[in-house]
Image 1 (cartoon, rainbow, N blue to C red):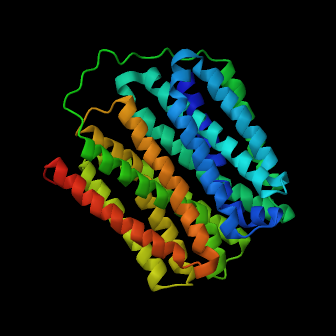
Image 2: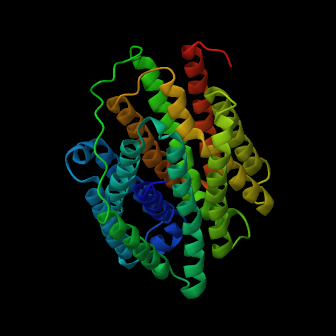
Length: 379
């Protein structure tokens, strides 16, 4: 493992910390700004818009400027925005800060993935799996930090302050290392023509699966508090269990990917999410069902994103432009589905979460069937 690779891993722990911090703090942020949960759900939209904006435009910056400097600036910006979040009393100000946080997170995410490929070339596979595992580690730790802050002061100021400070060491480390040189893709030639319909279905599939992931990660805390006797601290640990299961699932997916086809893993993942929703719908209000559903959801969702990339790459040449469309679909899903749930959460009750997720999952099953049919391959 090179020093640069290790630094990228630590940067993705920081990214996971920042990304998973908002869900467990939604009720407190709503109280800080004096708004309802329906209104505070605009934060999902703002964050995803910022993420989407940077993901579609930042690639050229990494081609021409120091990648480590750009990642360090992103971390500095993230630290500043995280420190501001618990201090803002107005929703529009908080929405602006979350949008800017999304920009910085996208820059760090894009930079980590791009520079890791430049560092390892064709042998990037194991390092890439480890990179996304590190994101899961940070996402697992974030709700624990929130729970500690709630226990200490019944507020979230300590949590966001600590998260902001944790961005700084990796920032300093990045500035001491030279960036890897860009790798040219000019010599690559397509092995098969791009199929527009196939690309469209993949984009829609990303829209749904990332929307489901963002909705579970963002609303699980509030769902647990509203439907079970779980208190704020226990609900924060519930969210941490989801992210912990997701992290463990990513480790399990590494050996599974060498033994099973991508389409088989995707089917298992979708069935796992279905089991999670059946638990929530069949046993509403049961603490054990919510905990089991959180763990099953984390394990099932863990390998969806990277396995879908693998599934697509075995059927077409993945250019940067095509991959950009995939990430755009993912960003739009992460923005819209949690927001839609927020609009109905108080009006229709918290059970709207598994109900709407079931509709999204059924649509994902339908698109998956179309993708397998277009792939024209056996199981």
